Amino acid sequence: MSDATTTPVTVYWRPGCPYCSRLFGDLDRIGLPVRKIDIWQDSRAAARVRAIADGNETVPTVVVGDDHSMVNPRATRVVDAVRTEAPGLLDTISKETLAKAATGPWHAGLGLAVIFLGLWLLLTLGNPETPYHLASAVVAAAWPVGRRLRVGRALPVMPALTTALGGGLLALVGTAVLTVGDLPVEPALSGSFTGPGETLVGVALGTLAGAAAAVVGRRGRTRS
Picture 1 (spheres, rainbow, N blue to C red):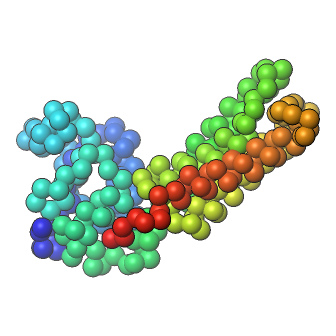
Picture 2 (picture 1 turned 120 degrees about the horizontal axis):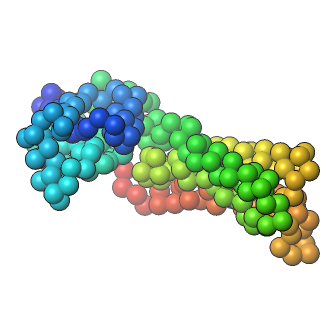
Picture 3 (picture 1 turned 180 degrees about the vertical axis):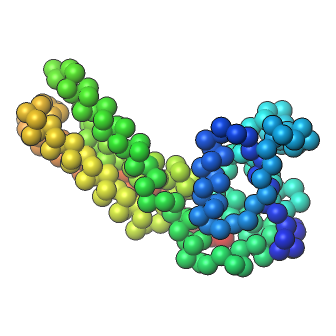
């Protein structure tokens, strides 16, 4: 373990890498100091990345302390490694900031939900005779699931619930657009619901499923 507060977090990257840009953005929001090395400009850095990543030049590759290496990690994993290898680097970062890092940006996953919403609307417009069962559920669940994937771990309960509710509202917007535009919503799977009724049930199921998927794994998880 390294004890020096100046022990750098080294991030090996290359231009045009979206995963590098995402990691840098997340680490910048946290305020964690890092040393950036472009593997296209440094052959020794590229060789080190290949040694870490099983012969591949996979970036971002992060080294914390003396030899704690990670390939394409989330910012939360980098912070966890810093707590172990160089805890002094976190002295100037507030607990509130670190807590926010554990939940990711509020809009993480929103883009995924919007994509699914757009597909649902376009497919219904282009082929209204085809039933798109549970499309509303997929839209509702996409936001919290996407946010969890962005963070790389289970979300705290409240952020998971609020994000799931946001996904549910987005699915309701899609339902309203289809209804106002006189386009067919999902047909009933049984005699229990009308077409719009099934869509609303799908929204509710997707919201609950998204919230559950976002928080699963938190119980019994070791805290840093």
